[in-house]
Structure formats: C-alpha cells, structure tokens
Image 1: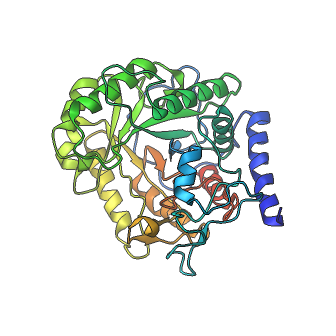
Image 2: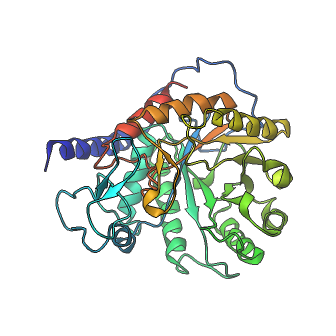
Image 3: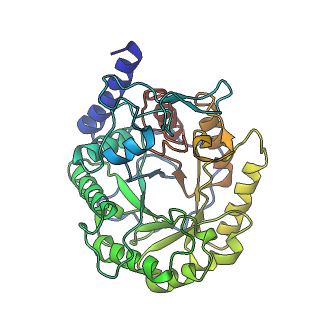
Length: 381
C-alpha cells in the first residue's frame, strides 16, 4: 500500500471512530456575517438536536452503488480485485478534461474505502459516521420507486437500499446524542415525461412507510423533507398532481432556478437548485442568480436550501461544462458566495456522485481533503 493510500485509510478509520466514540459534532463558532433571514421553523422534534450553529447541512447521496454498477462505470478491464485499487483515470492539468486509463471506464476516481456495496449495512454505517463526524446533518437520499400502487422494500433494489439506509440511520440515532437525519430526493433519472400516477404512487408509498420515521425528522416541519429533483423539467401536470396528492403529508421542496420558480412555486414549501456545475469563475453572476431565486422564495414566506459543490466534470458522459476543483478552493468559494443567499439550510452536491465528479467522500485521488474542508466551513458558521 502506498503512503498516500495509507493516509486515506487512516483518515476514513479516524472519522468512523470519532463518530462512534464521541457521538456528537465539534462545537461551532457563531457566524461572523450579518444575521440571516428569519426562518419559518417549528420547534425541533423530540429526539433531534442541532449539529452546529447556523443552517443545517445536508448532502445529496446516491443509492446506485452495487458491484454491478461499479463494474459498469469502471469497465471490464479495470482490476477490481487489486489492492490497493488503482486510479481509473485522471483530471487534466486545468482541473477538467478527464481521461481514463482503462478501456470502458467512465469515472476517474474511486472511494478510499474500496468499491462498497450499498446492500451491505456496514457501508451505510461508515458513511453515516463519517458524515456526522464532519458536522453534516444528513443525506438527501436519491430514490425512485417502481411506480406501482403496491410496493414494499423487496420490490426493487432502490426500495430495498432505501429501507436499509433508514434502518441504519435509526440504529445510529439510538446510540448517539447528536442525531443524523435524512431527506428524500425524489429522482426523475432523466424521465421528465414520467406519468403522474407513477410519481404519486412512489411518494404515497414513501409517506405511508416513512412519514413518521424519526430518521426523517427535520427542523422545519413534522413532515419529511422531500426535494422533487428536476421539478422544473417536468413536461406535464406532475408537479400539481403530486402536490395535490401528498402535499399535506410531505414538505415538498422544488428544484428551480431564478427564472423557473414563478411557474410552480405555489405548489412547494420551499426551493433548492441542484446546480452541480455552478462555475463562479466563468459565470461570476452565478451568486447573483442564486440570490435572486432565494429572494423570490423568501418573499413568498418559504424555505430556501442553498447548494454547494466541490467541482464538476462529466465530460466522459457527454457534458461539456466543467468546474475545476482547484484543490478545495472551489468548494470554499461557492460556500462563501452562496451563503450570501441566506439559506435556511444547505443541500450540498454530493456525497458520492463519481460520474459527475461532485463527490466529497474520501477517495483515492483526494483523500479526505474535501470532507475536511467542508467540516471546517460548517464549524465556522
């Protein structure tokens, strides 16, 4: 094992040990900036507590990492059994223009802990512990059900992995004073024509099974937080149909821009913007655009969940846009720019999106540097 890889493994192990032994987050310092816009909050639900002074931080979390999915993204030539795992590719000197070292690969980095399986409860236990130790409040877990009126945890891989994650969060909270929480990221997965009954069935199943589960406790409502990812891209009446069916049972959050909120804002309790490719260098107005959306949302008396990301590059999957990481400079710059939108909470992008290179979890290429930097930002709120 190389010295770099040893440092990464030690960092991961230390995070897990810290969360397991301490059961709480490091104390935070008061915010240095001007007071935030007052929030439309309710008292904390029984059994929840704040991770830090300032807006709670959630990060988007993807449930698709199985042995087969790793193979699909790494290609048949990648030596999955190697120890240590080699890097499947690299970023260019400019922080973009990713290239791969193995035919068929479409990702350039892998987790420091190895190619984990989200069907294994130990995977979730590690991720919860690492995130909690960094001061992260919870995961916005990306999920889509089968669309059927009758579902169960055994109905699909996504259903079973969601159910397992909820159980592991509940288990973590049973032994830790500082709780970790979930929000749902209802995912389109590119299908913006998906019929309303399928969306309604999925969210009805979710509300029936998890609506009162303490894993989904939050600061804002007794109802679970549910972000409808890509809501602005739906082509029919899906948004209004979902709001009519489950809007009283779930705290629905839109995925909007400053130019789209006016269309569907009335159906939501708040908004975020899944802006994974936000580039403060090529688009210095991006902060203004976020503030414009936040102002519209707050003017309506609703909740604003600001994004942040460490960088973005999905060139290997056909996307031209790239935001270089530049170490942790982009993460820190976007945090400082986007905090001016006075968020009620943060929805960061992402824990484990290796395809678009927005991941913050410890990896072979970056070690724990990105997660460490986020920890510092959260502590300084």
